[in-house]
Amino acid sequence: MVSRVIPVDPFDLVIFGGTGDLAQRKILPGLFRRYCSGQMPVDARIIGAARSEHDSAEYRAFAAQAIREFSGGRRCEDGTLDDFLNRLEYVTIDARGTDGWEQLASLMRDGVVRAFYFSVAPALFGDLAQRIHEHGMATEESRIVVEKPFGHDLASARALNRTLATHFDESQIYRIDHYLGKETVQNLMAVRFGNMLFEPLWNSQYVDHIQITVAETVGVGGRGEYYDKSGAMRDMMQNHLMQLLCLIAMEPPAKFDPDAVRDEKLKVIRALDPVLPHHIVRGQYGAQDGEHPSYREAVGNPRTRTESYIALKTHISNWRWAGTPFYLRTGKRLKARSSVINVLFKDTPHSIFGEEAGRHANLLTIRLQPNEGITLQVTIKEPGPGGMRLIDVPLDMTFSDALGPEEADFPDAYERLIMDVIRGNQTLFMRGDEVEAAWAWTDPIIAGWEARNDVPKPYDSGSAGPTDAEMLIQRDNRNWRGITP
Ligand code: NAD
Image (cartoon, rainbow, N blue to C red; front, side, top):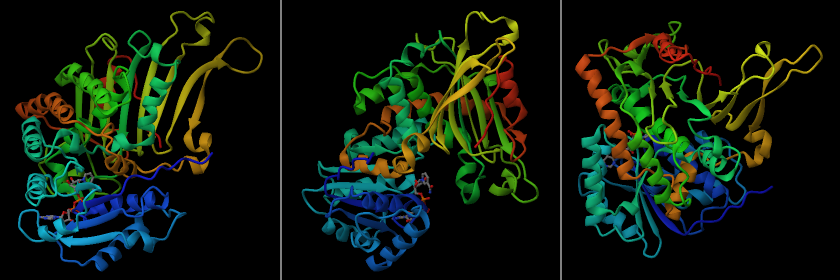
């Protein structure tokens, strides 16, 4: 099976912050991979724009290095690295000054898609939008891509939405949450809405509870200063976990189009119950084997109360989900890197096999990373004589096994999302009202911690998180699924 690659329309893509970490690790290598797949038209052009002084030749050398380091050794079927690099230009630009803008405007071509990727600090988003507009670069074919964090609370997100709306229509604004670009996340929609098997069971009558876990083994690394002002709630829960929750819980949209999908996601966020203080656990990691610093050491603030871990229980107050708890957790320096959604179905109402056969329930596991795939745990008879003993076995669809390594070599989330921007497809991007609704749910939780001077619980690096998080779910006679790679 050979995947179909449909080339996108010709485009000029400007990467503001084109020399930054994100451009280096994700955007440039991602574009190269799409080029290698034959998706980039001959007349596509990529313009790096940042404050540092470079010429285009130096920028190509920078991009070549980034691609060698971060493109995962991609074989290039349709061209060479040099062909790709020839599409790159560089303009030294100051978002807050006048430098470089005339030159950038002169490079823009008419009649092609114009995409402006704001890979800079959010404080510069307003300046960039205004200058693009002032220099006549905002046409109907223009679109802007903005990175997280999108605000740090409801008020700042609203202000940012208003600023961008001054110069761009909502249909031109692409708010990236790279989780939405992951193959399995989209497969979640395919599994739910492309099969008859699951949807009739997808409600509180059959689902006991749902767990969403996004566990990282890394600490805050070099992002300590930023992270300490943010914490796991703002950095992960408000966006990535919330988006996964929406996709797992939303009603079937009438069609797979951007607004139909996003309308349904928005309804989920608006139906979320406020989280009670005793339904949430914050944690902060300690040092590990004298090798890795503790959270406090990493951020250089011995008194910080910012959380690097969060676990919470919430409910969705609607007909489908009333009574089904959703347990969400995310943290740094945990025992394994694993992003997974577990849908735990209820026990059968009655066991015909007697007590000794034990109680068994189905489990649907959707693994986002690593090892993307879906597993359905079903109950069967334990083979052999000696009576009716039941065991649970997985029906496993690890994508790389089911599709073969070639087919399962999915585009990285950034690759897919950038091509969606060029195609003008907003389905996998967050709409302004979604982001605001997510903050409206998050803000009171954070305000509650501040009012109570809440101190995060310590947890060991390399563990599954604070013991209080175990108690949060055990109080309901349930257990977290293990965090395994
Ligand atoms: P970075 O600090 O590595 O790079 C910032 C870039 O902005 C540099 O190219 C710099 O030259 C440019 N810049 C700074 N001030 C400028 C100005 N006045 N005018 C023009 N250019 C200017 O940052 P990054 O890690 O690449 O992050 C960029 C954005 O992406 C941020 O909003 C960040 O929150 C977001 N983000 C980054 C990551 C990541 O993995 N790095 C992940 C998610 C979101």
